[in-house]
Length: 293
Image (tube, rainbow, N blue to C red; front, side):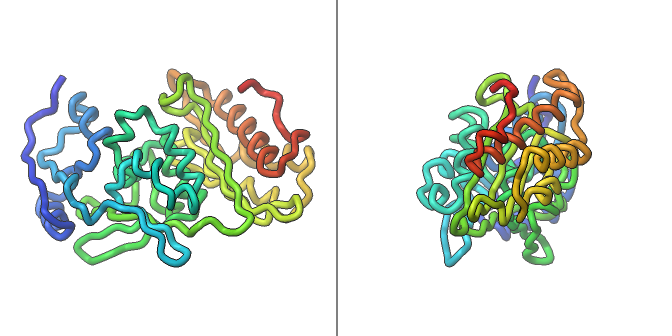
């Protein structure tokens, strides 16, 4: 199949793009890398009347560290995130997660902002944004808005963006001293959508978590920043404590059934990832689940 007919414009600036979005409203769609939008259009899952192609807006590309903030432009491609020494030094969780985004051809075209705006609940990067305490920066007719990542994702393929707004950048606090991270996903093949995944960021001091953020994905209609982490912070992590955290996590999850997995399977795998994450970050093999790789 091919996309239905549409009008097309390539703005020359962010201001120009916002003018086009204000004019066409919810009849328009923004094209950045096109790795999600174009397949959906070709399958006639969506049929926008107007395409705003922001792919040439150089002002939305780039990775910069200023003070204790790492800023990544919305049009920065996944491949550039992977190669960035700034990301490797200050947000290594994001680097590791990006390596699991689809395949090289997709990573060479797909953009960070496009992935976040698409808000696929099985996507790696939204969960990373929540684990890393990111701020999503959007621009619209009323100026700039700064949205905490935890508030940005509102449902399956839904975000806090209005039809007249444009995601322009992401800000991440640079990794703190003694910080460590964990990333793993279960997928049938590398590059496939995750069955269940976990992106975690922590601070470990003297064998204790002083901070722990657990960003699960593919476990509901949006990424989940798990409250179960609170069961493991500033306390000795024993097998019994971990079992309690797993029970809290199970109550938080709202997994869906599809051709890949049942809700029960997703709950099980999420708890496996929790125990592996805690074991890895604390270097405690006694906490590791015996479930298969």
